[in-house]
Image (cartoon, rainbow, N blue to C red; front, side, top):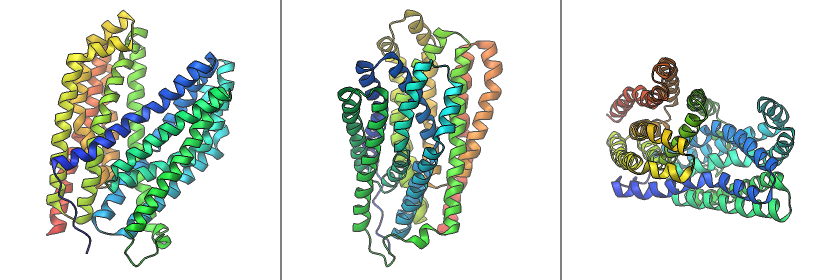
Length: 447
């Protein structure tokens, strides 16, 4: 018999959420540290190369975020069902997939970097240094993607403080190695890439050891610690690959939507483009908090689905959503009340300040309504109902593209923001009916 799952309370959810929020907030500091180091010891070409190179890695790595999400859902379900062997098998499949994809990126680095810099308009000096940065950092790709799988397992098992420690270790190592290679050894952007790659490998190794020890302590079943028959099971492999593919499509829909928003804003001039960029930083900051509760929902919902417990499922969804909605309301009110102060701290350009203040209410509204999409994503990731997430991503992107052209034409940047709010709202509305069916399916399964 599997051990009883702990009771779900608001306090327990909050305790799980805060380490995730801090870990999420720590992620952007990797880029900030890199920029700060090279900004003090490098040249303008180094800084430009870092900007272009980091953009490529951010896009590629975000596209592979399905490794984290799918791993969380499958691990949480296996944990809820008390199937320890499947917890280990899921992690093994995900880590192997991450390492394989990372190795593929390394093998394909030449066409990737050729195509990317052909699309960019950087100078010859920037492109040359950018290639050096890319060539150094790409060695960390297998570790970076495997770390996604390891992080997903930590979230699925509720080991959020370990997750925070791993993220802080990555940041600390990255900062120290960047200073050493780029500043002390004078390697510039290439040193930044090398330092980041080494930090990714070291952190991946530490996270793997921590999970290995945790799963060793929990190993009481009669199967081998590394259940290779399960890891290589074709049905489970197909299920895992299908889920990862669905999440990839959903992620690309989000990337395309955000990219289209930025491109449309550029058509209204440099001032509007800059104002929208600053306002999106407020959206990104809010996402750290909302993702915290969504990640907790992933683990709790996955555990409830694995245990076939509809009451636990509903309680997990309700309590995590209540806390997330309250947080979103506080964030939206904060943006409405203090957003202009934040904008003034981010830019001294008065035209940009004025433009950002004009569109600030749309930012507050976006944050408030986006909580539904965040929470439903958490529910469906935990339940590994990824096809619905894929379909919702496609529907919401279609809604956005259908609305953005007429609304932006009629109302300018205001219309663009209306379409952007509709984009995130449509994603939630598309998922809501499926959520009711999911709860109904659990009722039937437990009857």
